[in-house]
Length: 123
Picture 1 (cartoon, rainbow, N blue to C red):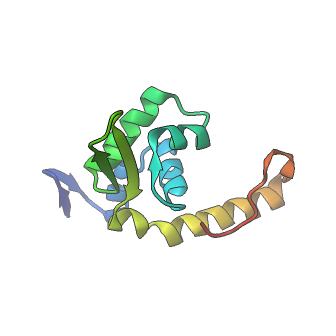
Picture 2: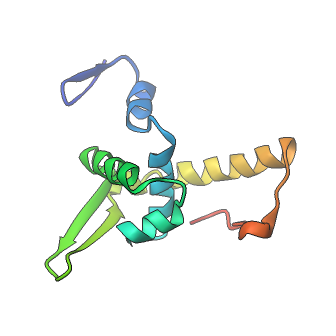
């Protein structure tokens, strides 16, 4: 058995699936692999996400210790998001997911690089 915050899991995969239970969290982490980002930068890079959803997902990732949120005492306030050590350990996993996605599309679809296609396999 596995226990996190008084929640019981029967296998470690259940822990992972509970943390990454939607499409947005992995996208946020993927974009933070490049380095620290402000809210607006993340929102521009993940243009399909609403501001409200991005706010909720950032908070959830922070609560799970996957990302860090640093507030700078400035006017206007500056908030920067970065990967925690646990979040950074996802780098090789996301790189492999990226490669798998490219291979999958090559086999079952097509790649059009008209929309700024990212061929770089590592962030």
